[in-house]
Amino acid sequence: MKIFEKIKTKVKTGKFKRFYLLNFCFLEISIYNCKRKIRFFPKERFVKDDKPIFYLKVNRDIDDTLFCFQNWIDILNVMHRKFCILCDNKKLEKKILKNITFYDTDFSFLKSKKYKKIVKEQKIDKKWINACFAHLTVFDVAVKESDNYFWNIDADDSFFVTDPKSAALILLRAEEYAEKKGLDAFSFDFWATKTAYKHWSFGITYTKPRKDWFLLLEKNQINWNDYRNLTSVHNIDWVFSHLKNIAAVNLSSFYVDKLYFIHFGRFLGDIKNAFIAKWENGILSHLILSDIFKYPKAKFEIGTPEKIIEISNDKILTGRNGISYYLKLQKLPL
Image 1 (tube, rainbow, N blue to C red):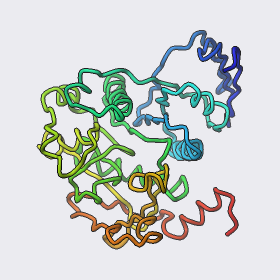
Image 2 (cartoon, rainbow, N blue to C red):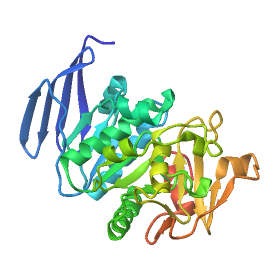
Image 3 (cartoon, helix red, strand yellow):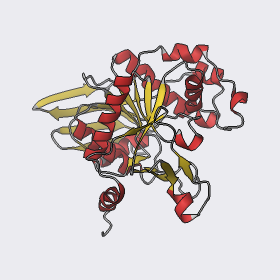
Image 4 (tube, rainbow, N blue to C red):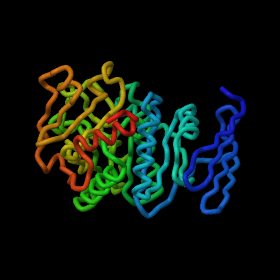
């Protein structure tokens, strides 16, 4: 660990520098639209906007973290949206500042708060406590700072296999649907189809802070015995699944036909959770299991339209076109 470190961040239209003493940031200088801002001992700040804010959660420092995170920054640039970065890993924070190209300087870093009472009452597994803290911090901050919808994104390992313009269209259409139907939360189909809609999960989630979420969690403790035949994982995602199952909240999931999606991780060491998926003609395929290992249970029938919502793929780069774009990003010959 360096005692003193000056980090200059790449910004398309502006300048951004941070100065660290060990892991403590004591000075931040930014220039944007010819305006210079100097912050000594910069505290957490919350970006403001009339449009929904994106909360980009990054804590997994794996080979593909920066690749995924840069893609989300590119998507948000297309959407002209503001964002906060929730990161509890100081080494990764510095890595992001050194390697990511931002489009302006109006972003901030947040840290997770501790919600020990909820963790204890809901009996969250030790492995999933930090993830629980991160998700709840987003809810806590977003509700306090705005009465608008917000996006909660796992930005370190999620990737729509399409270009940023198409990904932006997907998210905008998801926003429109969620607001029209009055959904409390609308999440991309990580687990809904694969569990016959028994498990709703976070990952890429659009949420309206219309409810007192913390009061709901306090009054509706999950009985894990009711789910023992479905999961051995006790995390906050399953707690929200329980809230959905008892009709305490109105949650739904969405997908895009012919779209490929990558959830990065240990593709062979953790093959169930790290996956490449495709939705097509009413079927979700876990492609590593189905195409490489020929696993017979790697294809799942997508639920009824009322449960798992299809977002239009009109004018969206899908299928082989999406793959071609991905290979180009990876600098592989076509």
